[in-house]
Image (tube, rainbow, N blue to C red):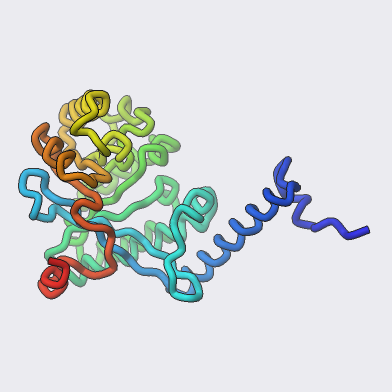
Amino acid sequence: MPKTDARLADLPPGAENPLNLAVTLRNDAVLINVDRALAAGEVLLAFQPVMQASAQRNVAFYEGLLRVLDETGRVIPAAQFMAAAEESELGRKLDCMSLKLGLEVLREHPQLRLSINMSARSVGYKRWIRILEGFLLKDPTLGERLILEITEESAMKVPDIVIGFMAELQTTGVCFALDNYGAGLSAVRYFKDFYFDAVKIDGQFINGIHADPDKQVVTGALMSVANQFDMFTVASKVEDAADAAYLADVGVDCLQGFLFGPPSVRRLWLPANRARSA
């Protein structure tokens, strides 16, 4: 009689199914590979432009998105590991690397404004805090060009901690953006206490908005709340010129999406790279 795999004892109910077991083992392998890549420094930032809605050839800022490479140098899709990593220390390590790389780019390019994603759980992670404080101590002007993006779901897990963290950073010039705004609608009741400077309207309300009255009503309501609290608005996942035109007409401040370009590891703000992508 074959021995039972010791791994089965640690699996949730139903995972002993061969297909479930295969998926679990595959996911574990991906997380191990991500951890290895972080330790080896096999990571980089990709940059996506966020455009001014009123002048769609002008970049307002860039978002820096962490890319993790496997042993062959290919990018590991974030969808394969991000949700699981968020629940463990691996998520904190990913946030540390994103912040470190982003701050290094800001220090290297004084004209740049950059947003970096973070989990609310990293607020209490000592290494993440040390990275932020260390860079700001050496160059206080970095804070004025840094935007920290926190998803609505993440912020609402520990709202009091996030509010306290934002209050502490008020004097540094760091800006905060609420990502996936509208996906849960649970953050609205905290807006008077939060220090968000911007909201990024969730892409589910943006795709096809120019011809969808329901999305227009929802987005209008989200914008009205944001405007009430003096937050500028960014529409995410803009992929159609008609959507971009509609969003500009109704007063969205910035637009981000594949219509203006996918994330690129090239530093598109440099003249040589701009000419190459034109």
